[in-house]
Image (cartoon, rainbow, N blue to C red):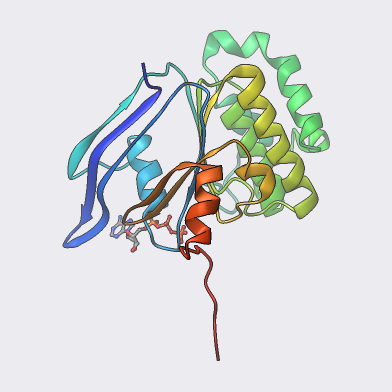
Length: 226
Ligand SMILES: Nc1ncnc2c1ncn2[C@@H]1O[C@H](COP(=O)(O)OP(=O)(O)OP(=O)(O)O)[C@@H](O)[C@H]1O
């Protein structure tokens, strides 16, 4: 049974088609990188997968119990009184809470923000806030992890470590991972699937095949000339 099946998905905002007839499927333990230019529909796809946007037509089937989600736009409003601890624990249900104190401690250490546990979120830097939301998405040990540009505010050194860490989660826990990114580093590309969208699917397949696709002239980089 597939972990995720997307079938002929179309999303319209008024007359504009943000996604057009998108289909693909993932098996348990697949690591999918979703790429494409600005405004190509990546976040729209993620929002349909997480039930935040209703598709105009088509269907999505998710055969996983727990889904962890890190949105692109982090929600902490300036001066909103919520602490790091509250944000992290908010990602758990009651039964899990007691057994996960040690787990949270471990994650805070890995993310290098243990000293901030009782601070208000609004005093944290963008990258520190992003680390808190990464912990929140991971703490319930999800079967499917959906990340929308998880490293956009992280410094390069930490980013590289985070990618390695995601790869180990996929291998050791057989977690299915969907990761929206503009940064297709080698660490991420190896052994992953690539979905390249620009309203419609331009490429879906293994990273090895994507290299050939790029060699045939389908670059997903943009050259600016003046
Ligand atoms: N709620 C909405 N109402 C109207 N248009 C929308 C809405 N959400 C997204 N769009 C439009 O749909 C298109 C796709 O947006 P989306 O955020 O999915 O792109 P993206 O690939 O994630 O872009 P980026 O790489 O810049 O984050 C854009 O043209 C955007 O303006």
